[in-house]
Image (cartoon, rainbow, N blue to C red; front, side, top):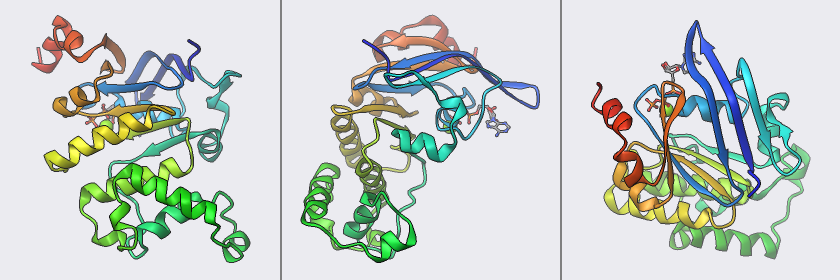
Length: 246
Ligand SMILES: Nc1ncnc2c1ncn2[C@@H]1O[C@H](COP(=O)(O)OP(=O)(O)OP(=O)(O)O)[C@@H](O)[C@H]1O
Ligand SMILES: [Mg+2]
């Protein structure tokens, strides 16, 4: 299998502190992967590097069939290449309906003129219907996003990212602040999304990670400490020591 994303030998220091230390990581084109690890392990920094927000001091980050280096591309360009990122706090347009939020996300050309002259097409409406069904908000299409629960807002934001059809979706701590039922739905949604793209999920909640049922990468001090199924990595002596703070 050729990797969709290949990170190799990446390091980055902040004021002399090595947040990412010789990190190597690969993800396949339709792979679901969970990244776990203690606070400060470098999980978010890893996502910052892939999305171009943080530039590493050394190493390579290669993307796609043509092995394009993401390190030379701007954040906007990386997003256009097909890397979508979900931050922890939902950033939906609260005064707009679910439908309009999804519609805005579907518009690729966001120049003022394009927005001004935009006409809804039947194709857009159909796609919005599909997206709403995928994220479980089909019955909420005409509600204002501001009225949704925290979990529903998170799903809407995932839907807005999916509207842009990323080839890789990066999701940082999606389950935080969710009810048990919302977490279960979120796990299903991400599993579904990973059938047609790669999805990388950072999460502390182990029940959630178990639901994902995917390969797990354990980060510690900016490097990969262990990799494999959740059962495999949680039996790893080094992983146990790190989580027990030894
Ligand atoms: N822009 C920055 N400037 C300085 N230090 C930073 C910066 N970004 C991250 N760090 C440091 O790098 C280390 C890794 O942070 P990171 O946020 O990647 O950890 P994390 O694994 O996401 O942790 P958590 O589980 O708490 O979210 C931390 O010690 C953090 O303080
Ligand atoms: Mg983090």
